[in-house]
Image (cartoon, rainbow, N blue to C red; front, side):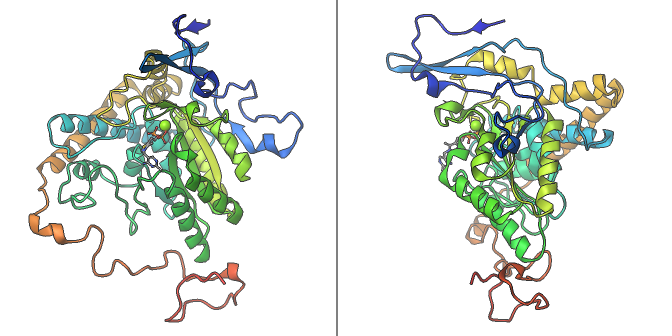
Length: 443
Ligand SMILES: Cc1ncc(C[n+]2csc(CCOP(=O)(O)OP(=O)(O)O)c2C)c(N)n1
Ligand SMILES: [Mg+2]
């Protein structure tokens, strides 16, 4: 059924640029065939079970700008979850649990903001929990990640407590940045292998690539995962970072959170390619398209990309198609988003889809077990919320102290082994460094 949401009198401004495409290219779900059989078609795989296609049109009414959506797919039934090739029952339930915790923590944060307890704004990953949690779940102990603002789920999976994140937003003394920063600009270089988010969009890409290079120079190939939005991926530094990873065959796993909006700009008003995964062809690395609301697809693509990274075969670009289900942050009511888009993606809520999958399709969870699981998550969250709310603000005297610095903070220690400098053609038996030598020399 063809649904038209446009009013007849409206005139689209720059129709081509305003088209938001979800890649309905008619190709096979597993592997897009190239027309001439060359390598280009084989570099991009599409794991999705549906390929919605939208057109978002920018309409100008005098001074005012608004958006309307046109699509034949808005009433389409929700597809099944794609069976994971790798995950067993307990893993699927675990991922679902992280997704629940992610969502409920963000709801708690929204309430804390309304109570005036949060200093500054709150960023949400509503509708993206499956992508955030399942991607981070694919990382191993030695791998690294660099989250962005919508990856609070990934932080939970990587071992941060909900209390850490809530304290951070409330600028509490016990927060990871000891109250120096709100939102999520924190990492953990010592225990959890997490690089802090960088606000300048794209800059995390070369940083994570550098982490992979550092590990390589210490004799180990690791996976380094970071995320970027459909808006942020347009930055020059994103290209530089991916290109360097591609040339050096470094284990970058870049997840593009293709959520149809960047602030109030619909995707295709700032890129011309049909699917962002196609950019992988230009970088010379594999690209994968997944349905970002299907946690199983996200996991499988990320798992394969991480395995490839650990084998030293290089980078992968994963485009996760989904929808940002709130505004940019708490201050943004997202009134500019056409309502039918929200309705369409609400039916594809990643938590609802996973719940159906576990309870109805696989029968891996009984209703009673499900209720128990939810009660446990709520109990955990309430306990952590209490810790966060009751913890103290920083003392005035502490303001002069560092955020990360302590006495030994500038001592950079090799994590995996001593540098072997194999890439530099030096004697492989030589391990360790002379006192005067820096760890890495590009000669
Ligand atoms: C280089 C750079 N340009 C602009 C901004 C301001 N900015 C912050 S978030 C944002 C929108 C990001 O949209 P997208 O990358 O699609 O991510 P989403 O918010 O949808 O997750 C912009 C323009 C920035 N932080 N860095
Ligand atoms: Mg976006």
